[in-house]
Amino acid sequence: MATRHLSPAKIMELGMAFWGSKTLLSAVELGLFTALADGPLDASQLTRRLQLHPRSARDFFDALVALGMLKRTGTRYANTAETGRFLDRNKPSYMGGMLEMSNARLYRFWGSLTEGLRTGKPQNEVKTGEDFFGTLYANPQRLEGFLKAMTGLSIGSAQVIARKFPWKKYRTFIDVGCAQGGVAVEIASAHKHLTGGGMDLPVVQPIFEEYAERKGVGRRLQFYAGDFFKDPIPKTDVIVMGHILHDWNLDEKLMLLRKAYDALPANGALIVHEALIDDARKKNAFGLLMSLNMLIETHGGFDFTGADCRKWMKDVGFRRTTVERLAGPDGMVVGFK
Image (cartoon, one colour):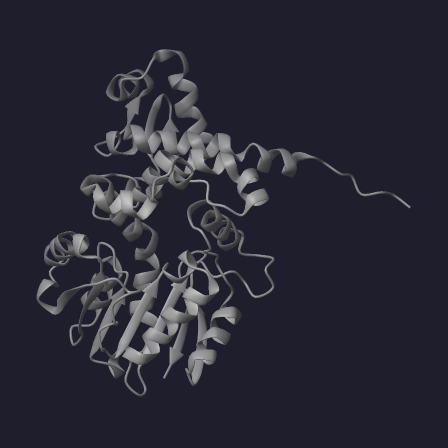
């Protein structure tokens, strides 16, 4: 009986995947895709524009071609349709904020994943005695960058939520942990009859209000300053929690779900959207890796399956729950009171 030919190719590709990842992250940091926004450039022009040493610049650009992040025609380099739309800093569709944060912070912290797996402890700023969220929210520039990154992470899913959820049945909504306001703005922009807002710590207010005003929905979106652990969630028809529950341990998750349940009227709804792990825990690698990122970043956070969240929602009183896929690896769990 013939034996199947075995190859280490997939193992090596995954094991060395950080090479390609860091190449993309450095390109975003350098503003390469923004530099190409006005049209193609040859290697020497692009090298000068980015102020690179000529030794490895051509290899850098060609590696990005091979990785599918650039196009090359003859000697001239250009953005792909995707990098031109999503990685040009001057476009409103720019989604590189999450990549910028990954490059500046997460890349080095993930180097300590093995230690995190052995100890169960965070591997970020906490190791040097800092509080990540406390430090972040105390620095206006870092905070704004983080909030923009959260918009980049959520905006694709927000657009699907705006289409898939039956918003015509409701009049008001609140996005809890709203960050810059990316989700709230997408929902309000798609449904003119809705009024709503976002809840977050007071320091976020001017960033949220500026973004909502710039997007033309400032009059229909109100900011609610508060700490969702200490303060009640404002009463509303629909509550949205995006990339919030995965930051916390199970007891804290259940506490937040109870607070949301208490803030809703009869027939109100809670939308939880995350990089939901598939129920079989075999396919959504991004969701599982995001859960490992919660090990790196938090004291007790973890990601979860749709089935997990549906059970927790029923445990706190929601009468009916549904799960739907969103953009990319994300999904939403909806609980109806």
